[in-house]
Image (cartoon, rainbow, N blue to C red; front, side, top):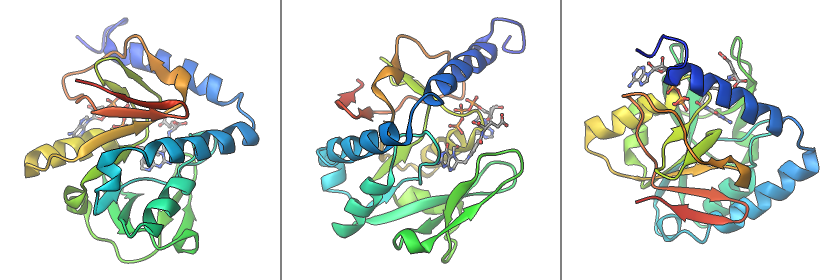
Length: 204
Ligand SMILES: Nc1nc2c(c(=O)[nH]1)N(C=O)[C@@H](CNc1ccc(C(=O)N[C@@H](CCC(=O)O)C(=O)O)cc1)CN2
Ligand SMILES: Nc1ncnc2c1ncn2[C@@H]1O[C@H](COP(=O)(O)OP(=O)(O)OP(=O)(O)O)[C@@H](O)[C@H]1O
């Protein structure tokens, strides 16, 4: 029973706290360098080279940087969708039209996010994506991902499954965040690959 001490929920909470503490020690230079290496590695993925639509997100704070990757994809003519947080933690989507098309949004109790300012396409727009780039704090050898705990991407994955959409699911992390074991709950779904500054690892 997951509400009991030692269940997957408390295991996730402890692991999140440890991983966020490590991220908090990174300097802005560390974050920027990791972001450019990450973009380079990610662009080697054939899935991204052939994608028409990619669902991504704008990194904030000590998250591995995504802006370099978003701009490179856009320059290649890829349609890049970005999330906007809805009440209840579901995600709406809008097209990325360059850095000037982002607005800093402060949702109560959350880190400030950068969200697209243009037309909102609705939560189902993500089902158009050929690749979904997911944020996270860790992944294990099975591809089980630890998120921030909002459940936004759990909902995205459930929505994709419901629509019969099967995009490539790729999580973007630092090297040290590929760990031995991520505690999982019944709703968790594995990703297909992780990109870190040192390369790509696929899960079977
Ligand atoms: N850059 C970025 N954009 C993103 C996400 C993300 O993880 N990173 N999301 C990922 O789903 C979605 C938004 N969901 C979010 C969920 C939690 C928090 C957050 O600040 N969590 C706090 C803890 C708050 C709490 O415990 O309630 C934190 O992690 O410090 C932010 C966004 C969509 N956009
Ligand atoms: N399909 C879903 N619909 C609604 N709520 C869900 C769904 N899947 C999971 N949840 C809820 O979301 C909450 C957070 O789940 P979990 O701790 O697995 O988040 P996470 O995977 O770390 O975060 P994220 O998915 O945002 O990256 C849980 O309370 C869970 O019950």
